[in-house]
Image (cartoon, rainbow, N blue to C red):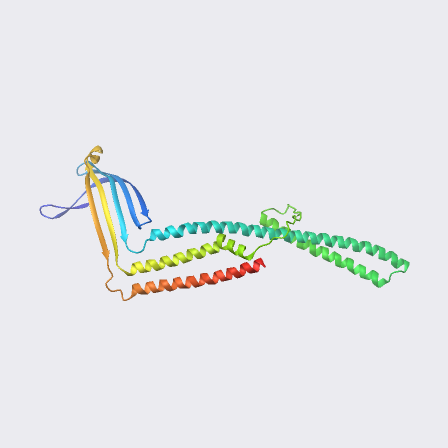
Length: 322
């Protein structure tokens, strides 16, 4: 049921209405980063078919509808996003590279842990073989009377200690192999026998060069830059919201209706609208100034935190270089 008003008497009557309403619309929006405005271009087509009380088909077309909205204030969100968002993307790439480097460092650490454990196991076994040979010679000298029993017992004790050392080194090597194997994704049937890499000589790392590379390529420096820009954006937004603001809008569109589809696009009617909206705070009890003060204080806190973090970063780089 639909309420209809009589044009002569003004009385309302409820009548039964069966309609089928279809609409198709395509819209393109473009932000203007230079001014902070938005431009929209829209085209649409509507179809209204009424079945009761009388059958009728009506087409409603909007060939083109252009609208422009331009805020007139000191804060441009698009300009700040244009500064910050590319840096966030670069930050994500640097964090990915750093995560890959961290994996490489971890694998290298596991590699040398296993290599050291295997070499210690080889040394323990070689030491045990030497002790066994010395023990055989000592027994013969003890039989000939050129060696005391205490010295023979000392060699027996050394044999026992060598066996213990072999057991300890074997367990350490097995644990190191499991750690490296699991990190690389191998199963327990894979046996890793490592070879020591060739030495490439002494590597010299000047502190100034390393520090310059850190600030140039690390995610930390870029994160500090993003935090600084975000704090400056908050200050600019607080200042803009504390004072008067205005918004300029303009619209132009074409529209037509018809009983047939071609008629809906014939001789379209135009519509132009230009408007200016002005907002002036009369009395906010200092709320706007308070927001500006808070934003400025937070920006100062961020600057102090970044300064402290960079000092700590320099210290860490110096320690690693030394």
